[in-house]
Image 1 (cartoon, one colour):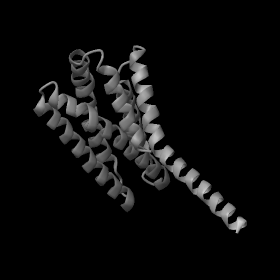
Image 2 (cartoon, one colour; image 1 turned 90 degrees about the vertical axis):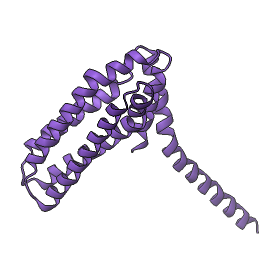
Image 3 (tube, rainbow, N blue to C red; image 1 turned 180 degrees about the vertical axis):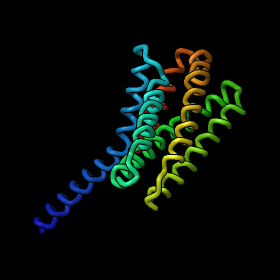
Image 4 (cartoon, rainbow, N blue to C red; image 1 turned 135 degrees about the vertical axis):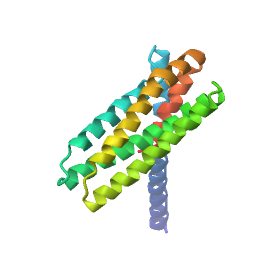
Length: 189
């Protein structure tokens, strides 16, 4: 009887620890990212720096995709998956944090709709790229078109949207925006 009690208790502890680990691994990264993002802006950082870093990373991946040999399915697959993941994290942060602010607080409703529409166009390009990859076809034309769309989108955000938000949002609100952006990106592992 004592053996069964110890075994049951051990299993309870094991499963409890496993459950805590799973919950912690899903909840902890977004919480830590939010704290880091907020702290970075309180120390004088730019709340949109993380998004601008993403822009550089995305454009670099597209450049590598353009240069990848059509015969190298493994390299093209790796680059495609990296692009898709980076775009997903980035889009989630912008669509769930930045664009609603543009829509609600700046009154630029048409602008926010336009930004969402460009993200939808990017997702269509991703579908086309994946189809080309699966069929072993050359994707350079689609990569070029996607690159042009993203460059236009990046210029619009970095030259117009982000500067406008920096001016319109209070200094007290900027750390919260940075925290939200960091948290959203951390949700996609």
